[in-house]
Amino acid sequence: MIAGAMAGIMEHCVMYPVDCVKTRMQSLRPDPRAAYRNVFHALLTIVRTEGIWRPVRGVNAMATGAGPAHALYFACYERIKAVLSEGRNSHLANGVAGCVATLLHDATMNPAEVVKQRLQMYNSPYRGAVDCVACVLRVEGLRAFYRSYPTQLALNLPFQSLHFVTYEASQEMMNDRRIYSPMTHMLSGGIAGGLAAAVTTPLDVCKTLLNTQEVALAQMGGCGQDFPGTPLGMPFGNSRADYLAPGTVKSAWGTATSATRTNPAIGAKPTLEMRAGTPKTGATILALLQVYQAHCRQESRPASHALGATSFYSGGGKRPPHCHPPHYLKGLLMAFRTVYRLGGLTAFFRGVQARILYQVPSTAISWSVYEFFKHSFATH
Image 1: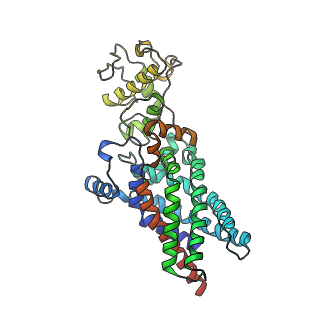
Image 2: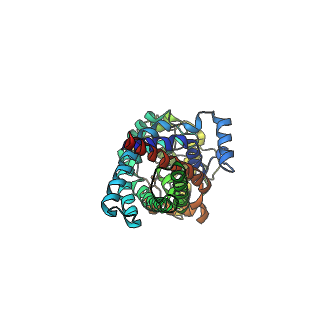
C-alpha cells in the first residue's frame, strides 16, 4: 500500500501539467482564447497568458486523492492476482484483478477528479480546491462528486484490464525472471499505458464532460444552436457572486423568461425587469434569452408567445411546458449523445494526443516507482 501510494502521487504530480492540457483540449466548445493547436502550444499559451503556476492548479487535490486511491488499487491488485493465478502468469487473473482494484480506486479517486478538472478548465470560477469543494457541495450537492462514477468505471475497467494484461505480457517478454529491472518496468508501463489510453479516449471525453459540466454544451446538444460557452460550473452567471447566490439558477431563468416589451430577435438589447439576486450583466441575460428562444424554436413555438408580461420569477407564474431551464448532464448515454451532436465522431478523440502523451510517461513513472519501493521494502 505504501509503494502504491508513492507511485500514485508521483505519477499524477509529475505529469499534472500535461493532464491540464488534456482536460482543456477535450472541451467541445472551448473559449477562443483557450483553443490550442497541440500540447506544447497549449502549455506555452497557458503559461504566457495565465501565469507559470496555472498548469499545476489543483495538483494538491489530485495528490490528496491519488495517495489512498493507489494504495488500495495496488494492494487489491496484488492480492487478487496472487489468489487467482496461483503462482502462474494468467492474463485472465491479471484482468480480473485489475477490474476489482479499479472499483476501489475510482470510488476513492472520483471526487478528486471532479475538483481537479473543474480547476483545470479555462476561466474556472473557483479560488482553489477547498473553495471548489465548498461551492459544489452548496450548489450541486454531494452527488456531483459521483455523477461521473459510472462513466469513470466504464472508462477505467477496460483501461485497467488492458493496462495490466499488456504490462504483465511485456514483462514476460522483457523480464521473464521477474527480477527488479527499472528499465523494463518503465518500458512495459509506458507501452501498456499508451495502448490503453488510445483505445479508451472516447470514454475519457465523456467523463471530462460529465465532470466539468459545461452546461451551455448540454443546451447546444438539445437545441442544435452554437451558443457561446459559459465558464466552468457556472450555469448562467458571469461572476462568482452570481454563481454562489442561493437560487441563482432559478432566479436567472425567471428573469430571462419574464422579459417584457422585448424584441425576440437574437442580438437585440432586451429591456428586463432586473431583480435582487439575478445576474448583473446584460451579456448574461442575452445568453439566457438565446437559450430560452432556442427552446421555443425547438418546440415550433414563437419566442414571443411566452415573452409577455407574466413573471416567472420565484414562482410568479407557470413556465410554459415547452420551455425549461437547462439541466446538468447525467449519465454516460447523455454524455455520448451530447458529444456526438456537438462534434460528430471525431469529437470522441479530442485530446487523444495529450492523453497518450500523458499516459505513457505517467504509467512508466507509476510502475517504476511502485516496483522500486516494493524492491526496497523486500530487501531492507
